[in-house]
Amino acid sequence: MPSQHPFFFLSTAFTYPEQVDIQPLFEVLGSLSADLGIEFNQQEEADNISLTDLQAEYVRLFINSASGVPAPPYASIYIGNRGILLQQGHDEAMSFYQRAGLETIESSECEDHIAFELAFIGHLIEDGRLDFLREFTHEHVIKWYPEFFQRLQSARPCHFYKILGQVTGLCLKQILIEEKADE
Image 1 (tube, rainbow, N blue to C red):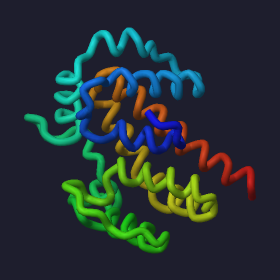
Image 2: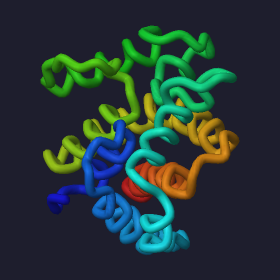
Image 3: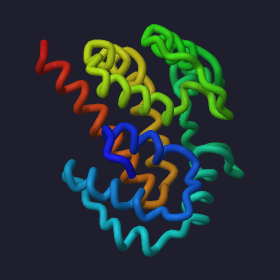
């Protein structure tokens, strides 16, 4: 994995796992979790789950499940409490992207998917746009991530996604802590 800001890794980890070798995902998540004081035995976890298992778990958690999608990864599901895609949360995300000068890309995913939002945070950090980063995190992401995280944990995900949710939450919290420290 390239050495970029951790938010790029988090973004990648919240996309459908396609790479044949999933070991690097576990290594980076293990490193991040250790830095944040979260116990995660990356080697044991990687040895106990295959790419097919990880893909099936991704589908169950984020795309399709017999009892409904436990943790839809879209802001529009949570913001405005309507449970519908392409609503207020999507519009908010698009507004932030446009204000940052980003153009939309063609994708099979909606722009308010957690992966896009985490990549956007990584870009803002790399570009040094910390005021805009804090605004995006405080006025948008933090409005929906806690409920998404709660639903993810309630779905009893495999250890990889459980830890991924925790690490992401702590990274977002760090942005908010730094914001308060700067005030």
